[in-house]
Amino acid sequence: MCTALTLSTKDGYNLFGRNMDLAYSFNQAVTLVPRNYEYRDRVTGEMRKNKYAILGMASVIDDYPAFADAFNEKGLGCAGLNFPGYFYAEENKVPEKKNIAPYDLMPWILSNFSTVDEVLNEIKNIELVAVPINEKTPIPTLHWIVADTNGKSIVIEKTKEGLKTYDNPIGVLTNSPTFDWHLTNLNEYMKTTPIQPENVKWVEKELKPLGVAMGTKGLPGGLSGVDRFVRIAYLKSKFQVAEDLLSGVSQFLHMLNNVAMPRGAVISEGSDDITLYSSCMCQQKGIYFYSTYNNNGVSAVDMNKEDLDAKEIKRFDYIDTLTVKYQN
Image (cartoon, rainbow, N blue to C red; front, side, top):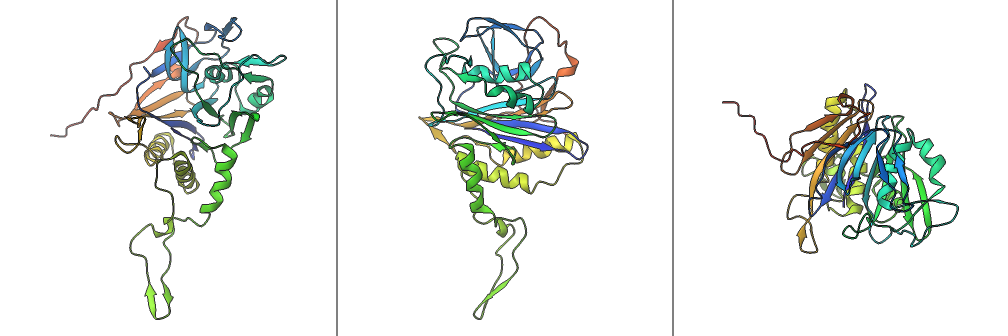
C-alpha cells in the first residue's frame, strides 16, 4: 500500500517522505550508498557507478541497495509505491532505449540527477524491463514520486499504454489506480472544508452541527489507496505551514499518521498490513528522519556527518524498540 507526501516550511526547507505499509519486514534499514559505488546492472550486465551519494531506507540484496525511498546529496528524493493491476514492464529489452529494471529506476534517478527537470529530460529515453534482482526476489509492481529542493514533484508510471510522467501539483501519492484518475477524483470533495457550517432552518426546525469537524463530513475514512489519496491531499491543502524544520517534521509525521495502518485494520492474503515505518527527509539538510510501528519516537541519520566518498555501503541500526522517558 503506502502514502507519500511533500511539504515545505516557512524557513525554506522541503520535506519528502512516506508511510511504508506492508505485511512483513524486508530487512530494511537506513542505508548510505557513497559516491562512485559500483554495482552490476542486472539488465545489461555492465558495472555502474553512481555520481551522487544516496541515503534512504533499503534492503541490501547481493550487494545491491534496493531502496524503498531515498534522496541524494543534492536533495532530489524518490519513493516507489505499490501499483498493482496497472504496472507493466517489457519482457525483452527495447532497442534504442536505456533498459532498466523496475527496482533500479530509483537508484538510476538518484545516482545521476539533482532536479526534477533533469529527470524529465532523460526519462523519455528509458524503458522498464522485467528482470529480477535474483531468482528469489519478485519484480516489484511500482509507480514513483520524485521531488526536488525547488518544490517540484512528478509521478512516473509504466502501464501497458507506455511510460508516462505527470506533473504532481498536489505533491502526494498513494497506490492504484493511475495518478491522473486520482487527481480527477479530488473534484468529488471540493466542498470539504475545515470550517464549521452555520446553523440553518428547515421549515420551522433549526438545524445545527452536532459537534466539531462537520465541514469534513463525507471525507473518506477508509484505508484504501483511493481514500488515503483524498485524505492526505485534503490535509496538505489545509496545512498550516510550519515555522521551522523540527515543527515541520512533527507536522509531516502527524499527517502520515492520519493515513497509517494499525495492526488488524487491513488483512491481505491472511496477513496484517501495518505501517512498518514513516519517513521524512529534509532535502536541504540531508537528514533522514523516521519512526517505526513499534517505536513512534523519531530517529535520524545525517548524510553530511558521513564520508560520502567511502568505498562501501553503510547501514544504520533500524530502531524499532519503544523508548519511554520516565519522569519520576
